[in-house]
Length: 136
Image (cartoon, rainbow, N blue to C red; front, side, top):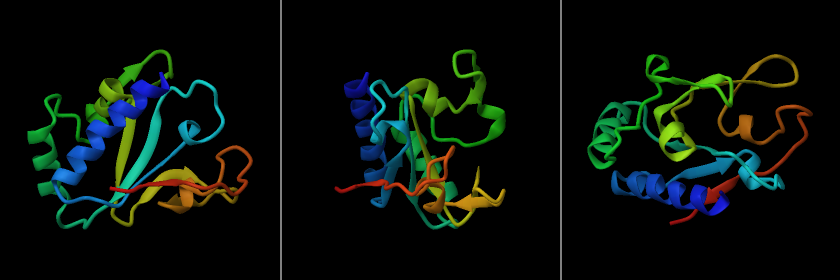
């Protein structure tokens, strides 16, 4: 499973490189000591004004057109018991654009966090942890 996730991440990272994105970070159980992580979480840094054009270009590259974060495009997954992005269903990877927005992930005080702060603490105990930057 881990090798499949790495290969799938490679596909998406190379698509990001193709459109000029090179600040990419991953997190989640994949980068921790979980024996069998089920997916990879991450984000990439981009200019909010360029994001619509970048999404268009990414979907021209990806044969499955998975580059969307619209809630209406999410598909329910009974194993995780939540609606997941098309990217997750196809690749088991979720890469979100970081354009200064909130993540929906709350800190220990109930405040919504932005990237990278949301990735720098565990979600259950809020203990500090690291993230991995993908280097080209």
